[in-house]
Image (cartoon, rainbow, N blue to C red; front, side):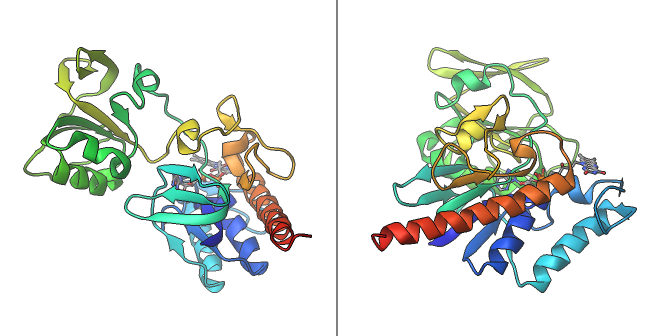
Length: 289
Ligand SMILES: Cc1cc2nc3c(=O)[nH]c(=O)nc-3n(C[C@H](O)[C@H](O)[C@H](O)COP(=O)(O)OP(=O)(O)OC[C@H]3O[C@@H](n4cnc5c(N)ncnc54)[C@H](O)[C@@H]3O)c2cc1C
């Protein structure tokens, strides 16, 4: 059981981790080990205090070196869902479940829009979580849409359970697959329900399957954690980065514009300080004070 689970390895999540480390709290920092691609892929950054004219790659190295110097490890995983367990939270990773007394959501913003029919069929033939829902499709035929080769470990896991997979990679890399996985290089544009089947409609064909998994780098917020209050497409927070859910904090791009590194890092710091106050309050309540 960690004091806090931080989701996201961009400037917001990493700064939150540094602050919690300084405050001697136990935490887990979850996200890609490489840091956020919005950090290492940036061409040149000119507006971050103390680091003039720095290339994204070097910017990312500076952040990761800072974590290293403070002995902070990144747990390379993607959180599919967070469950409120009453007095703690459980977080579902690809293969592992984590438990923490508090959460910092620093997952950045999602740039892509949902595919037509996706929101309507979510939980009714469409799933975002292979670990949670694979067994519902034991020996059945499914379609899987992925936006990055990083999702292939989840596709391979699904292939151990289901009957067959039609795989729609919506990116350009070549993939090597075998056995039950058929790659279809067409772009899904709509999902519909027809009798007991779900239909994946692309610009040139229709594919009937029993279920659809959509595995993206980012999970939609309302699916990530039930009951979180949103403000448009962002998580609603106050100045202390508190959400409407007790013990859940959010920071960085996920809470709104402007989308800037220094704002994200600053909010990561505030969220972590709020977590410290929250943990103190929990301890006082446990001691009956
Ligand atoms: C090309 C480009 C150039 C930019 N240049 C500048 C600039 O010069 N100056 C500036 O100030 N800003 C710039 N920005 C904006 C800046 O990148 C963002 O404001 C900043 O990265 C936001 O940080 P963040 O930590 O909130 O989110 P992000 O950097 O988006 O990090 C989010 C992290 O969360 C991870 N994540 C998401 N979902 C999950 C999940 N379910 N489980 C685990 N991990 C998850 C992601 O993989 C990622 O690691 C640029 C953006 C881009 C795209």
